[in-house]
Image (cartoon, rainbow, N blue to C red; front, side, top):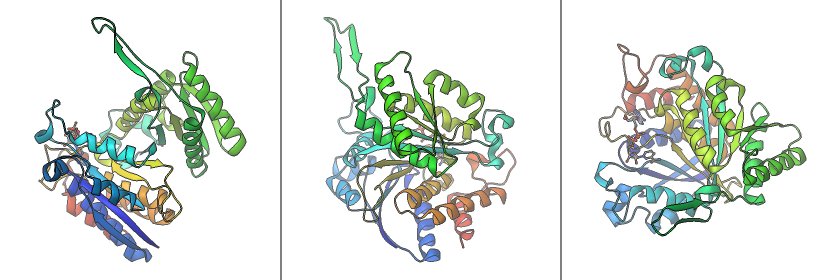
Length: 362
Ligand code: NAD
């Protein structure tokens, strides 16, 4: 297969970790006989420095022309002034909007070798393999709002959802569940919120009419927050709205202990030359300015993001699994970057970790 991938390394450790992810993709291309063409573009602080804006038009064009986008991270102390007119995060929000990415997927799978890195007890974490699908472009973050009252003492936000917004994200999550253990948990607050009652009704209709093989359950967001730390292995795929998803994805990511291990994908309706969603793939961590430039960042979240890219945007399931198995193998073989090492354990740098993963893809 031929595919075009736009890479947005961004700031801080972004270029270091995406560098390793690109090398892994190049290697996958060689081993499996695919031709991946990479093009780099500016996003975030580096784009502000070079062009005065966090999201240059050329970057948007390069992403739209690609089959998939791989992103590192943006931001850092240099651009931290909250009153500044241009800020790195504008690039991040802007590119998600420009590509119409309505669903964010965060898988949390625990590698047995890293159970010690979590704050939860190993027996609670055994068997955790959950995918959280968060609606990304609707709900209370985008509904009508006002800061009002004579002295600004009254304000409101509106949690607004429409049927098509719910249908498309539930459909995507149900499809993902079909490829996994076939269980979908829809999270809402239907006992209180009207928008949640619509969410629940539409989710039921979509799954019952289009995905008879998927088992759907509804739970309230407060119960979901509790179950996620009490018995996280009970979940397969979780689908939820923007606000609840924002909170639950962060909670779920803490199960894994280190942010350096967790990938994510954002998908939209735009279809690429392969006939699949043109997604944006990125590690969930930030630009880690405290360790940038030292060659010690953990590249595995970026490499696992590349595996998601192979799966969701290029339809290369076997290749994706091979990358994920290579990551498991390096961990079993004892490779650790500093963030996932126990005290006294030998650590490797970013490049050595990336090389170890490539060596296990044959
Ligand atoms: P962060 O994720 O950058 O770092 C938090 C801690 O985790 C730091 O100690 C860091 O060294 C460590 N860490 C993160 N990724 C790591 C990796 N791959 N390997 C080893 N250690 C890793 O979060 P922060 O410190 O809150 O934010 C730093 C900057 O990143 C800020 O400017 C913030 O706005 C930005 N940020 C960007 C994104 C994004 O681009 N999606 C997300 C979150 C934060």
